[in-house]
Length: 136
Image 1 (cartoon, helix red, strand yellow):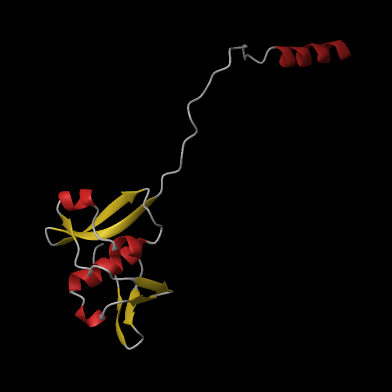
Image 2 (cartoon, rainbow, N blue to C red):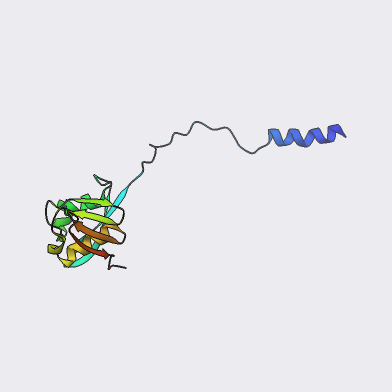
């Protein structure tokens, strides 16, 4: 009986079906690609723009920097005033400019880029919101 059991075990161990081969070299390891989505204007319409490998993970800082050269060449613009800075704390975003002077398009750009309902404040005195992104 032992011999009968020994034969199948030996067959399993010696006949797995994998044949020896040469070493197969792979290519370079894949790298993770990060993206950031900012909302710019194209023909006056609010449009999401995906940026691969952004220079920052702070999407509001990317929005404040405005369209890249390539984006401007493709017709993208912004109504967020140059030099605007943002400081987000939960659902409140402190803005370095008078929030009541922001155009509706600029407010929409900020709300959509933040990707959450937000209230814009300036120096704690003036607030605007809560605002959500009007684009589905």
